[in-house]
Length: 158
Image (cartoon, rainbow, N blue to C red; front, side, top):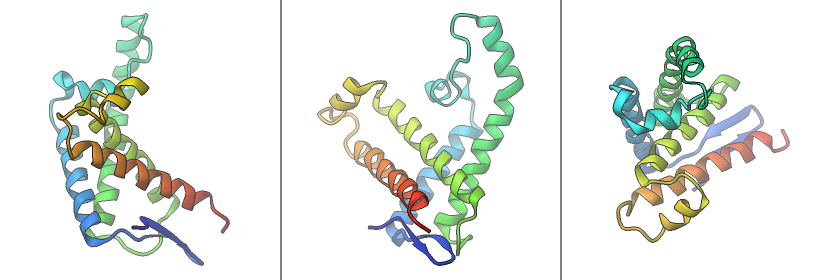
């Protein structure tokens, strides 16, 4: 289970077909969240944090000017990862692909963390013993492994 491999020409995706299918499903679900009504979804708070928690007016103005661009970028990132996971894209990851992967994996982990109630180290630790996220916690950890492996691959000697 090596998610990525560095070859002479660059970084290649090396996930198994089952791992690709899981990632495709997760990415499609993320796209559904991003396409939906985020106003009542706690995930929005995690993905679009309050820039000025002490100043609601400044926060609203900041969100007004940045949120649609951030949402578009997150949607684009998910689309890039989905293309790679489904095999629509293949070969060497470009620098843009690498960044899309890193950002999308972060968004997937933030989404799952919100669903598991992980907000800090203590709640992360307790999520191992809780039964509400059985299986989902494993997916959260796997995504962390994939992201960590991508970072290690990207920073390894060329």
